[in-house]
Length: 194
Image (tube, rainbow, N blue to C red):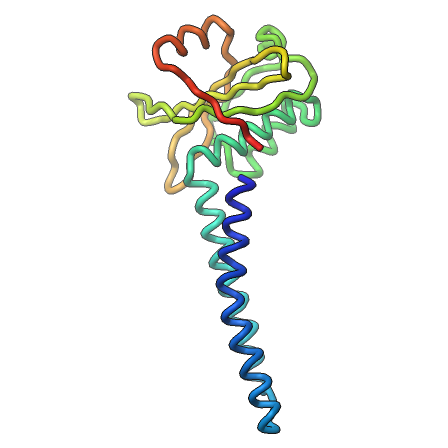
């Protein structure tokens, strides 16, 4: 997520620098010829700048909704806030809905399920599986690992594509035995979310 923000900020800067440099040159050329930078030119400068920034922002929003790993990272970060006590279950559900991450049929693990799986109210580092796992029903599964440095706990996200955006249908916890069985079938490697 952070990398996507940096990339799109750099894209915006590299789009705007030539445009703004051109307009500064035009301004000084007009000033040297004792002409004014008229209102029409100012309006065009503002309009084109706004269009460029809007285009970059819209493409950024498209990317973070279309890339499965970015959707999983955003959902995982909200789940981490739930785990460390910054969000309660209704707050978590509202945050998922507000950010457009959850589908209409979204279900998640209850507080009792979290406690039974070993989660406690503390900070966990978030890790996301390096690859996603397509299911037969058209959905995709991504695994999350939540580590406090001593123990690792696991959850899964089941995502489905609606239009161009991926949305979470299910966020459930896995017991160590369930994860070990999955890990034997397909070796699951994780990468840390920074």
